[in-house]
Length: 279
Length: 264
Image 1 (cartoon, rainbow over the protein chains, first blue to last red):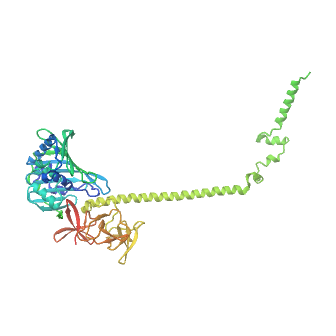
Image 2: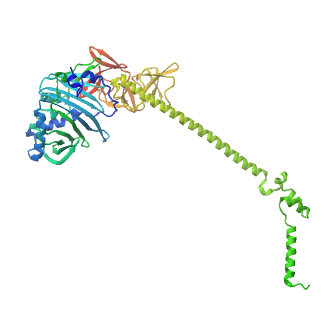
């Protein structure tokens, strides 16, 4: 059932669970990408505008707002899409030193309520499936998975995950239906830095500053704008750690069958539970 | 013929030269002839005699030369002994290096095995000494291990690992509850539990006891992020759990991270 897409992009759970992972270094565990990006989730739309400081009126250059809005609208308006990205994440160690970890991320989204995420990083390899009712997370190397019942649209899923489980999928804010409408709700300033080239593609470099984080986007221009790179600077963390995603490929035409978003545990996989966040 | 003054002087000089030539000691080959020609032979005949050294007080006498020789011999012996000692030290250094290389390869192979069989041990600290319970060795733990008495049994403790001598061999065992060690081993991580602060390394939990650290039974709910190699996987009430020694763990995902929680 995976033949339609497994060869080109995504693999079945059985294939993934059977993969051998590269040697993992034992380091202090890093903040998961989803949690790290939760700052962006909050800043890019989950807080109503009235939370902004009254004394500071946002100052966003029209060109910057327009460029980012166009790219976000393309994502928000797509019925289905996939992307591949290279992730670089700063980890602040207790000794006040910083370490960078890298990973490869693949995501598939089919609106309103299907999601698949595959992340292979230095410290963990994780798969996520959401078929509209059940969220499943598989820890690939350890061969352990957990399920959680969460019926709803993707926006509802992300909000509930953050509230109940304490984390969200990687780059979740970009996947929300309302991302374009609420992207600037908590932004204080925004401007165009200048032209840039990423992977041979001309882009416009944009920077937006908020209270807790700064975001930089590199977006292509034209009729079909794309986000090529995003860097989030976590200003509340020691050392101003950064999370960066460079998008290697976007595909708005990929065929995505139902099987891409459902999980069947392979033989020998142990089941566990999600620990709810204590409030 | 009338002789001039110059000719007289020349004649005199020439005669003087002849006399001088005749009286030169000459070389060894001519020595005898010369002596036969008129010099005292005793001065030269003694020169080559074996007994002549005794007569030459200027050499400092026989004792002086022996002392020097002895000193030289002594220095030579010391030098030889030192060389032998250094050779011994180098041999030991080479042996230690071989052992180190062997340990390193064994360590790497050990963790390669873990990757194949003990997925829960994947995030165990690398480069930290570990031997799983049941590991046996004909050699005692390396120098630096300490004896620890717990409930009538004597354990050898080395770098977080406990050994028991069983006949001619030594076997790794799970850490005995109540064992007290002077300091925490390398590689421990702090864990949160309902008890006071605890530290964890390869299935062993330590809590501070005065100036030392005691091995404790972990309280239910304590979470760690790896299990030591040597655990077994089983079902308890239909739930997948892991057992290491007397401790049961169940996997749980905490804010997206896989942890192992002690089951009460």
